[in-house]
Amino acid sequence: MLGYGYETLCEELHRLGKIYPFLQVGVMGESVMGKSIPALRIGQGARELHIQAAIHANEWITTPLIMQFVEDLACSYARGTAWHGSNVRRLLSEYSLWVVPMVNPDGVELVLQGVEEHPHREQLLEWNGGSLDFSGWKANIRGVDLNDQFPAYWEEEAARRVQLGPGPRDYGGEAPLTEPEAAAMVRFTEIHPFEIVVALHTQGREIYWNYRGYEPPESEMYAERLSLAGNYQAVKLSDSDAGYKDWFIQQFRKPGFTVEVGCGENPLPVESFASLYAELVPILLTAMDLQVVNQ
Ligand SMILES: [Zn+2]
Image 1 (cartoon, rainbow, N blue to C red):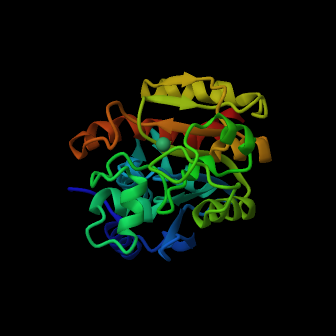
Image 2 (cartoon, rainbow, N blue to C red; image 1 turned 135 degrees about the vertical axis):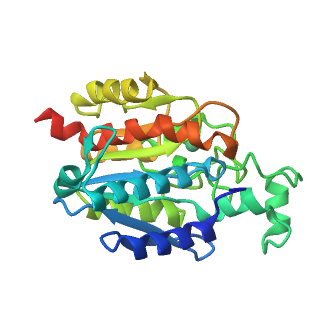
């Protein structure tokens, strides 16, 4: 695996859909460049959970990580076997897990392929300071950081930023939800009564769980359980706004988490995939089981 781009994702979704007919593959929105943004559902339960990956372009390794998780989950479900001690059949009869494995496909393609053939080559080069190296690019293809686009104290985040226009990272756009990928995430979240959301990022081996006191009381305890599962650090953040999990917590007052997978410099090397996956699996299985154990 040299990189895991949009085409690979579509092929994998097709392949998994054939092997596991109970996987439901659909589309949750469209990117700036017109790519369908896939969403998939595993599980038949009435209660709903959400995991998303690759909202930041150069954190694309989160896509194969969540896809491997879905595949292993599907395999356990089909066989009726336990996985890391989790009763997968029970979990997936109670829950439906909705996964958006690549929120920012245009950005991921830019990081992996560069601008050689790109229709917006000149503009992108300018925004990238003239460099052909796009490995530091987090934003979407219009140079807007999608995880600074959500209507949760967006103005405060904008005032805090030093990045005043389109670029590789940290520019939140001219207003909240100007970008189709972020707007689609909001619509998708509004039509599903998610009990818990998890946003996958790299890196830092940290879990962010709070937002300006809007989080429900159980969020802190849940974060402790998640961090214990992966040997990560649960971190209480301040001075950060406009992210997806921030908006989710503020809007719905339910637990939302950002999981910063692995340690190193983004993009994390593909050679680290196996160790990243080993850390992440117990965290995600714990996330799926939080409410069940709580009852
Ligand atoms: Zn990120």
